[in-house]
Image 1 (spheres, rainbow, N blue to C red):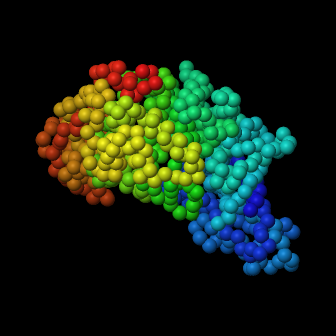
Image 2: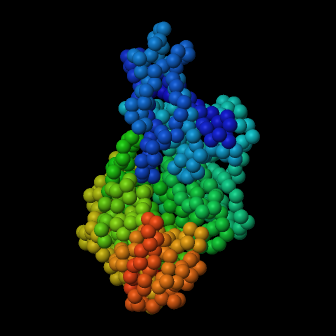
Image 3: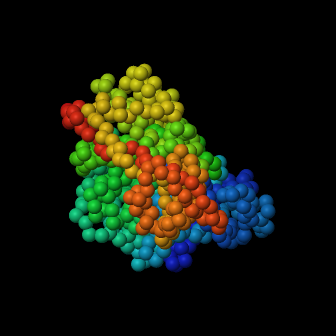
Length: 576
């Protein structure tokens, strides 16, 4: 079916977008079931976008009203049988309003300053119907001077903004930024790359445009070319935010502007750009079997998100190191932080990477006070197991490059087919042999401990542990003003053993009032293995709980290079 969409933003301060869909049904059809996606590819949680819809109505080309009924959470039926039509009319118009006031990479946000349109939140498809060559027209205040999107522009007049895509999936996979945002761009391999920056930036010395271009050039060359006709980077700068969402020929990024002004923060920004850009290949093309074609009304369970996100989490840091944007020391410091997060996650004992991937819909995207104790992130552990795989492959005079070459070649030969775990394991075996495959398969499908220290020694690295004798309570605090609350309790830590709960307010230790400043100094006045009386308020009742202070678990102080030539051969084989 052919559909034409129109998005109208008349009064941005109301955060409302009017959506108008026009089309023509087959004459024999008496009903059409329209749906709004319940989730967005790349963000694995049911977000129920239809909750923001209001004032839905439908009519024929002649203006006669058509019956519209909601028949499911996100499905709306136009029924010609129930409509009192004077004569048969197969043309229809469906219109509705969507409230857009949530600025994330997976939602839409409209206000006086701009419109960020994440199209799964706005555009309905038709159940079991292929939408071919849809068009979308955008109507917005004339004061807004810029529009950035990966969609193909087919406008015939300067003041009219009409775009198209091959199908519905490609259409909603193209975010749109409209406003007076800063724009720039560059060319790589003869292809235009557009940059859009929304939000305030603080003065800094970094060259975001040039570094982004270097990332595109490096990854594009590494992967053997660019698989798109144009590309758009849409970046939102806003205090305290971080994240990104990949699309086939664009990405939406969010980053805190204060972090750009310091070296470590800027390195994290570059890694984010590299991460989302590499998804152009890994996820948007190379993908688990279950991630396409998409069913937008139900969960797409897969055990392979460790391939989608874990492999990408390895390559983002590795790319910016290999291209010289960061030093070897900075790269290893980033891996040290990843390893410390991994070691500090008790949930790794109970949740394999397969399970973490499959349960993303109810765990990773819905964290709670016990998440750290019960599960492990497939981003975090996934990146670590591919880090380990790269080292294991180096012993065979191979690297992660060889594995990626097989993945990309397989996609090029079978672009419509997703991957199964067994296919991935067989590619690893082809590169590194059965012993490497078996070790890797254990790391992804079980909760067995990974001897990362021994594996890293094979790359000329030594772990430098920090084993300070520091008192430890085993809680993560949550400060509300000066008051101290427990945000989470570490499994098998002192607080866990004593019976302290997430949500408890810590009132006093041994009768001494505890507020934020004093709590932050508790390591200075508590003693390891001493018993303390902790007074807490729980559900408005006072409790006195006996707790024995423990010792802070050992942390990695650093990853030390003891054989630089070997280390560089493992992580940057092109230089050797």
